[in-house]
Structures are given as structure tokens and as C-alpha cells.
Image (cartoon, rainbow, N blue to C red; front, side, top):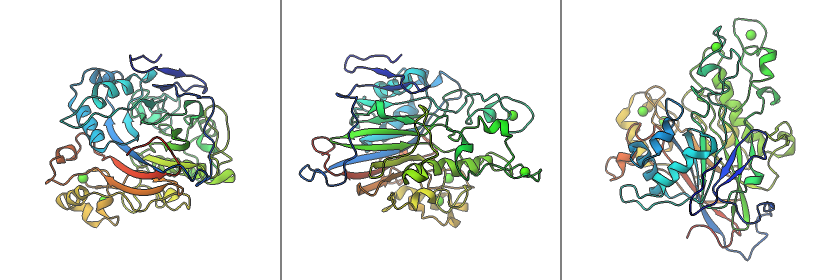
Amino acid sequence: MATTTTSRRALTVTTLATAALVTTAAAPGTASAAPAAPAGATASAPDRTLRVATFNASLNRNAAGALVSDLSTPDNAQAQAVAEVIQRTDPDLLLVNEFDYVEGGVAAELFRDNYLERSQNGADPVDYPYHFVAPVNTGVPSGLDLDNNGVVAGPNDAFGFGFYPGQYGMAVYSKHPIDTDAVRTFQHLLWKDMPGALLPDDPSTPRPADWFSAAELEQVRLSSKSHWDVPVRVGARTVHFLVSHPTPPVFDGPEDRNGTRNHDEIRLWADYVSGPRASAWITDDAGASGGLRPGSSFVIAGDQNSDPLDGDSIPGAIQQLLDLPRVQDSPVPQSEGAVEASLLQGAVNLTHRSDAAQDTADFSEPPGNLRADYVLPSVNLRITDSAVFWKPSSDPLSHLTTGSFPSDHRLVHVDVTVPGAAGLGRR
Ligand SMILES: [Ca+2]
Ligand SMILES: [Ca+2]
Ligand SMILES: [Ca+2]
Ligand SMILES: [Ca+2]
């Protein structure tokens, strides 16, 4: 069960088959989702700016329960620095990757109460009346020998790599109401159900795409964590926050089971937003089929673990999203700090083809620093600003973005105007 606070009513929703969905507030009239009105339908209402961010915050721990322990006091130095980055950026809608899932949303509430709502290092606190968390595949034992090492055990045989259920999960925080009843989750969607899936091959046998047995494919899930469509009400409009965290394309063998999975996890959202034909194969955890209604506003966000030109993901993996006519990737979020880090760290960074200013993660060399984290709005939302929170050494906040503390990833934000979203929003 969700806990309650004096200022908010906690609501636990169990309408989806196995997902425990938690938000902190019941919006008025939760039974009716806002219809996806065409752009400009409410021409008299003013546009509102929405700041949308993604942050792989590395708020995962080595053992179940450790994150709750760390967040139960306001004194954890890493959580303080993560919260300060969020406070300095002040997003309206935020995805946190690598945030351990704890039943009932306990960790997400503790982070909100003990960190986000307390000033960090003089920054203004941020107030998120709404949040969403749900179970993920990481660390959930499959009972199958998915890495084909002859034994069924360990993080590589889980439905997604992890040492315990919930490790490397996700959390969404929002200043705007989340339409909890309309959330769709895709934790259980099977990889084999994707037409033309890049199912990995055991190179030691002549048969193609046979890393997994036919029996295993009946259980092998596509999403390494989960994919969530979280509808957020911004005034009279609904923006679908499409969040995920595809697996790193490495830590495997010549079969490239992680590279192929990364590619297809990215493809799931590409198909989801590309109309009824492309999305017909997709089924959510409640059994409903199909993708996003054409004309809907959306923002795809998350650590996609794929640089457009560098690193180890399958070539073209992230382009499945970047090249979609319904998706905007311009101007690309940038930072001065990433440019400085690339020069200081040198080595493979100096041979990268992607612009160092667009890097979002400080990995060791190789693979070097990469663009891994994306905020990609639909074309019916107008981009007004964007940045990566990666400060150069001359900046007084550079201690928040040096090396891998508080995270090896940096927060990325994009500001969009939501047409006709009267009455709510920032500024
Ligand atoms: Ca195994
Ligand atoms: Ca084979
Ligand atoms: Ca590096
Ligand atoms: Ca780079």
C-alpha cells in the first residue's frame, strides 16, 4: 500500500494486470481522459511552456532495501547532489532512470519528501504533487538459462539484468496531474511478438536467430526494465510521456543479445507513435492492443543507450526515433561541460563523430562520452529551449557534473510550448 502524507492523498491503483501503480494525488474527474484535440483547436487559450527532463541518476543500490535505507534520512550525499541538479533545472515533468523500484512507491516518496522538497545547497526546493512508479523486469528471475552458460541463476538470467527485482527501475515526477487510469505499461510484452525482431543468433549453429529456444521465446520479454506511456494533463491538453531505459548494448557475447535488444527496445516507441499499422503488434500489460492515437502530443524520454554515431549500439538504433517525421530532435540539447570533458579526457573521445557538445554520459574510455539520454517531443509541440546539465570547471555548479558523481549521466531537458494549455504550466 502507498503511504499517506498530511498534504496529499495517496492512491494505489491496481487496474493493470500485475502493475502496482502509484500516484500521490487523485486528480478531479480521473475517469475521463482529456481528448486529443487537434493542434490549434483551442486557439483562444494561451500556450504554456513545459520543461521536460530525463536524468539517469544512478539511484540504484547493490541490494534490495538499500535505497530505502539511504533515502530514509536527508543525509545521503549522492541523493542530495541528484536532488540539487533537479532543483537547479526545475523540470515540470521528469523521468528518473536507475531509480530502484520499491513496492508501493516507497523510495520515490522518500526521495520527494527528504530530498526534492528540501533545499539542497541553497537551491529552491521543487514540489512534485504527482509521481508514477511501477514494477520493472530487472532482477526478476526468469527460471530460464537466458545467457546460455549452463546454469539458471544470477542477474543475466533475469528478465532484465539485475541482482534483485526492481534494481535500475524508473520513476516519473510531475507538476501536472497524471491520468493514472490511462497509463499503459509494457513490462510483459514478448520480444518475439515484434514483427521482424532482431532475435539474437547462436553463431555456433547454422540455424538463424536461435540464441533463445522456441520455449524460451514464449517468455522472453522485450523491455529490459519497462516501457510506460504516462499521460499527463497540461491544462486542457494531454501529453503522453513515453519513458523507458533500453539495455546497454554491451556486456554480452558474439550473439549480441544486448545490442539487438537495445535496438528493438528503441523500436518499440518508434512503432508505438507511427500509426495503427506499425503499432498493431503492441499489447500492453492489461491486454489492450495498438499504439498512440495519431495526432496525440507526446515526449519520448530516457537513457536510450545509443549514440547516433559513436559507441557500441547497432548502427541506426537511435535513428529509428530521430528520423521519424513525427519526432523532433532539433536543436539538439548541448552543454559546454561536455566539450571540456571530451578534451580533458581525450583518447577515443577525440575520434568520436558525434558533436561532443551533445554528449550526455561520461563513460570510461573506450567507449568514451556518448549521447545516450534523449528528450524527443512530437512535432505538434514547439521546442523553445534545451540544454544538458553539464557544467564546465569554471562554473560554480561544476561539482555536480564531474566524473561519475552523483551519476555518470547528465540531466537533459527540453522546453516545449503546449498549444492551448490554458491555466497551468510554468511562467
Ligand atoms: Ca545462465
Ligand atoms: Ca545459429
Ligand atoms: Ca569519460
Ligand atoms: Ca562523444
